[in-house]
Amino acid sequence: MAAENCANGTAAVVAAAVLWGTAGTAGTLALTGAADPVALAAARLVIGGLVLAVAAGPAAWRLLSSGLPPPLVAAAVAVAAYQLCFFAAVGRTGVAAGTVVAIGSGPVFTGILSWLYDRRRPGRRWTVATAASVAGCAVLVSGGEAVGVDPAGVLLALAGGLLYAFYAVTAARAITGGAPSGAVMGVLFGGAAAVMLPILLWRGTAWLGEPRGLLTALYLGCAATALSYFLYGRGLRSTPVARAATLALAEPAVAALLGLVVLHERLSAVSWAGLALLGAGLVVVALPAGTRPPAAGGPEPARPPAQEAQSSA
Image 1 (cartoon, one colour):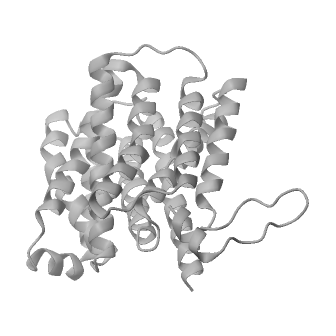
Image 2 (cartoon, one colour):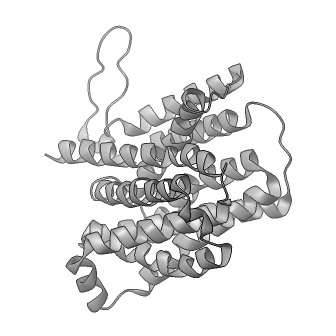
């Protein structure tokens, strides 16, 4: 039963990452209209947060009425602040560098925060697989070419990675502590929606009157935010948050493949190598504790339970 729960948790996290990976393509199609990136991100959080809060319903209200822990309040602000840091970083240092630093640093910060909060040091397999996945992500996004780096932009991207790690770890601690995952996500993203609503109004909403803009905002809010974070919360019930953060690196892989199919982009040979490295790292992280890819001569016997527990993510 524990193995089945672990597999279901892994599948839920990967499904969430696949939905996140569709956001870039959807946003690119929408940005050909009158929307700007900050307005699109704000609309995504406002719609997604509202859907999550309404779906959580009484469970979210019970969580609020029981005395909302300060870390959850801070995590709700962090959800909104991540979006702002990410777009500010991309604006200063470019899409490639901003994306690699923000998304790539997230799993690293998550592992560090998990260690600090729970005294649970990530295993060696997680460390190696995460390093490979982050390296693959960097090569995939940059295509092996040198990218301009602005120090302020890199700091903003690192701040975004830390904010992501903070709200992911905070949500995981609340969920493993007994709070319903839907209620936790409803509170976090409902709070983030309240923070982002003034920004959306400031940036303008005229573009939502266009069918393309409205449909894109609804997709990003309902599918790439509400549904994805509902699945992510479900996954955190049985998946250690450090492992979940690494599995979430499937997002840039999905985005790259959609770019090929939908936007007719091209990947260099180096980018394909990065995609393969990223995929290999994710496969290693997704394998249950104590499981290794079979050798050429046949399946490898499982390790003793003591070794499994020591190396688990």
